[in-house]
Image 1: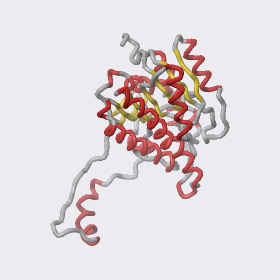
Image 2: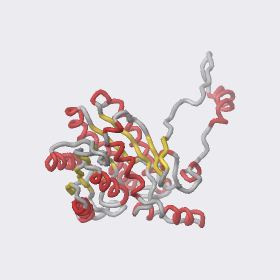
Image 3: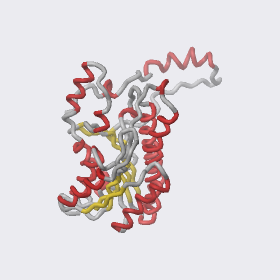
Length: 306
């Protein structure tokens, strides 16, 4: 590894890389020596339309900076289509070393008004899309006994958010997927980690400010550019992170956090077994002080990104 070239010679696929965080990751991967497949179908935030321009523009920018990249406009949401994205890496660069599952769409709506289509669309792109990409890449990672996955999750799923049941479920599902991949593929030297990023992007800009406090947060968030999330992704793709797997990180401007994972807090036991009444009389008072409040991301990360 050349100094300053953390992923020299590696082949990296970044999905949803035409704009925002995906673009920033693709650009930094290339700057650090990777050959990059820039995947983006060029749709709106709601998944409509389709434009090959964003992916090609990133490829052009990488080439202008002296890097190597190829554009791909296949959809991650379809299993067969996702296979073409992996094949694109093989056709252009002969191998694959890392997949960054970043592609996503929004269909934000309060839960009791959410339609089946709004649920399915988000789950298909983000959770099923992450599975599709990971599953196709896994065959190659297993054969070469090396590989890395970086899945972009969200504090909306890790902590909580309003009006994002589909998005939150998909993003937390990606955490479970990542941990399972890490466990199942450890024997093949394949790693899998998650990043919950923070940035002012086209996606976050689409969320309206509902009160003055939210408007103030938005103005501050505009200072947190997508580029702040890219260094951790490059590190996780590199050999320097060979012992890092099954972890969940969060990035906020110049802050990086290692997030907790569910573990038992406290247990209660009754030798005679439990009844519903015993749950009310014994379990509830014993555990209620440890119950989690209905926090949202802003409640846990209550300070501005530093």
